[in-house]
Image (cartoon, rainbow, N blue to C red; front, side):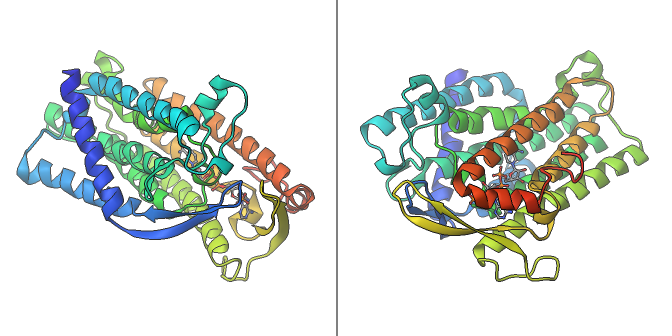
Length: 375
Ligand code: NDP
């Protein structure tokens, strides 16, 4: 059974790998700590669309496999993705010692456990185009996330003959979240993190299996939920939808504003005006001095991480879509709050080291992290 599922996983990963290599165009990433600029094959959205069109075509017309295949094989899949996650992290770890892609960008801390967990190589690659970080961060986990949700909706259809509004809400809100992820190459994962267990295992296992927990829990929290799929009242569903959409708007606009600002080097309009910014300089590991800009306009002038605020609003909406019968789905918003607050503090610590007194000027201009006057 396990071998059979592993075979399926390898087939699906190979399919994603072929798309990763064959579709899309090349773009430059941000400067690495050693001062290098890598090129990336940017095609996540196209690959995601092709995969989902094929999934729907199979469910509707071809019937090669059941659309409930994921939920029906949940536990074997969890085992197999774990095997893959550990295999990838271990390969990246060994590769960093034996044949690193850019030795200048490797970070050896002296603590072998930390090296394995947080990664040594910044951009491990095989050949010119297979970038571990870009592939694992933007493909298996994120593509699986929405496929898993679709598989749950199909299971509900199979069990009851209908799909509840709570299931539709979670599917729609998470699709909108996921479909915007590939637009931005300036995220911390891509620009600042090294590739180890944290990204390798996290992207293969944690991301798809935890983030779909709300949908999963609708079925398996116990007999009550199995036999009582949640149908929300119209005001409850409308409230969840509005919270989710407003969160999505803030999340997407904030990320878009930074992406546009960085891409055009400030020659753009944010909220109809030329953006204001703090001019910064920093030194890379090779000793070179570089210039950068920190925007103080748009959502980036409201607080320093409004993209996280929007993300948290969306996360709360997914939880509220699960009703109030059980606490487990609310684990997600607690987890996301801890993750994003910790991420915010970690990022600010890095930025403070990078920009030094320029960062102090920026934090004086934009004093709050997530919510004006609160935090
Ligand atoms: P950001 O996209 O916010 O990137 C932070 C970096 O942006 C900083 O390190 C700095 O990099 C640069 N920066 C900071 N302030 C400014 C400014 N004022 N103007 C211009 N550039 C600035 O971080 P993430 O990668 O963490 O987040 C990206 C998105 O992904 C967010 O929406 C987040 O919510 C989402 N996310 C979701 C997760 C989930 O599990 N659902 C997990 C992680 C992220 P530099 O050194 O280049 O100056």
